[in-house]
Image 1 (cartoon, rainbow, N blue to C red):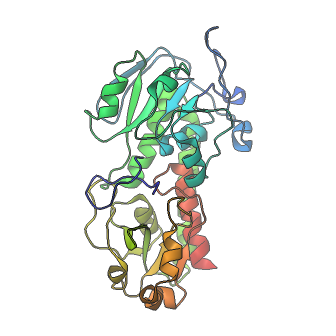
Image 2: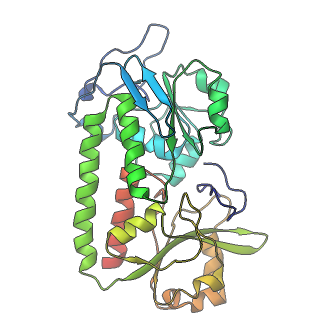
Image 3: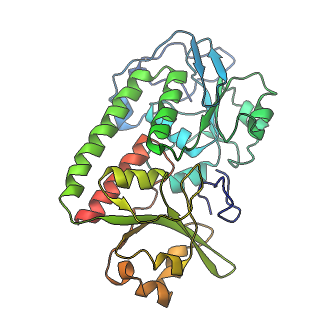
Length: 343
């Protein structure tokens, strides 16, 4: 299963989870002669973007209190986690290298990764030789502590590393936006970031009004997997990004069971889901290449008798919405809630 790992032992072994600035965004130097010029993100939104890029030296503190110093905003950025890949693209940049480009294309459709970006292997075990062969001037990673193994490996190379925190159940929305803004600072794209954050806030406010006009109250979002013929279900509880976005729309998260302290993710089974009363179910519409849990549930007689399923209150989100993404993924999540509740 290609979903985000959990810090608590609540799931089986899961896969662990910036090019030159666009000319219209105010580019500066294109790099030294020994580096091929990286490509810009030429999406329609970025082509129309008129925000500027800062050009001076950058000094910032990353998510783990580490000082990152750059002579100028980073232009050739390698990124090892999907949320941060999305964030870089939203900032109208294209990474020179990413981890698991194919997986990103399956699970995160908020921003399209252009062709030609170097794939450095899995998110958990990237090929560092390939990564540094792209001549990055910054590597963006997701770490779990300041002593994370990936940080120790990258410290052997003479390239700045920006360590971001993938989740914080205390305030997942603030953490998501904070990670985005930190990357914007490192790349000189603060003005662009403010436009995106303002868009997100407006999107949320408008959607809340639409949900208020429905009779929806309790909900739970989940994904899951099949292992050894057994179905495991992962509810997104308090502290999960997708759960908190649902509550920001005025809904109440029905999952009150144990969750991990970073991602707000729980674990249960079909019987556990049957205890959620009148809650509306939402679940991932992305088909996991390693096994379609939704198809398995559809064939389960007990599952079919759960009120939300039997009464048609169980809804698949559109495929390709990354539940651990950045502002643009969050807008997709908000839109999915609204569309499914108002149809």
